Length: 232
Image (cartoon, rainbow, N blue to C red; front, side):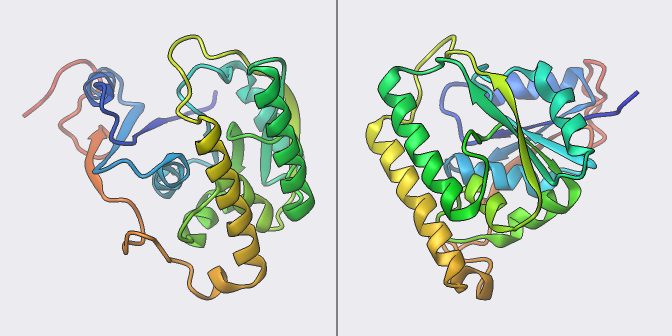
């Protein structure tokens, strides 16, 4: 039987995620939380989580319920064939047609530039080598999918049906999507020019990694019993 840990990264969520995650960590010793001091964006938040992940394999996924956790065993099984990263290849009509079309065009371009699978998203299984390598690559505007591709380690994908967002709306409007795509292309270009490899910890805010406001859970402190009680 596999052991596991669920590590949440609270990217300074303004609608009460910290309270919910704190309660989850109190109830289950397998739950841990990094609460960031300020909102740093999806990709830097992912890198902060990877810097504290400790398993042989790490699964990166969003918390918006579009990616099915039931696909995790298939990702891990594929990874054991010798791949350092296995992406959940996005399938289905999980977004409006125009968003899907522009996304596929961008991912196709990313595939040409750094050889990541053309259906790659941020639901991905990473082996220990990649989990440790990605946080130190740094760069002022990191884009995790491009970073995985630029390592040159073996990658693959397995088709996974993605659901529509059940509640709320995506923070990635057209402008945000365009900005994210531009940052990805800038990161890849910088990598290929070897600028980032010479200075791996560049950061627009002047710090090498996001500041963590709180470490929550039994792995960080013995005060969390994992059985619903807080021991002072």
